Image (tube, rainbow, N blue to C red; front, side, top):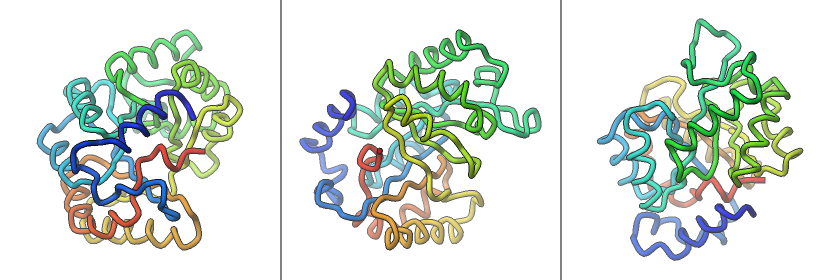
Length: 246
């Protein structure tokens, strides 16, 4: 396993706080659920609420969000896995615009690597990366290879948000020997607590068919409330995202 991930494993094993006491026997879990929380970096109080749940989330920070640098360091210091939520071109651009700092289909290799380096500079404690939007990029081998080359060079893993069913993300990651996991469930396409709780149940139900399940939610109050209400069920299964990488 990559060098940085090994360091995180040691951190999680010997963590002196009780933040993840409900999921302390990670290695002995046969059914493992990992949850990534996207769109981090805007809301300090809500970030602290997610941290207080005592669940081993991975927090994915937007490079351009105002508090990403400060909150990502804080989360990393507390033992959470931190990721870069990299803005990338969706297929319906410009209807949905990931911003000027995104990776676009017309981005050159030099420009793509530059944007990745700038994002990593903002979030230097990151252990991995996933895409923000990015449905067009996830179908484009050329730009995925640029991304994987960067991740390989910096010992970072990739989480494929799978915003399109035919995403090539993990296939390209395997070519570069970059650890990868693919999203199975989106928790909060609709920002309603009953809906999100049902999606959490769906993620748990999937564990009957699969040993490892990856769910993605977003930094909003309804997702927090649903996770709070389901936290005791989740503690039976949840592990840090690095345990479901392939």
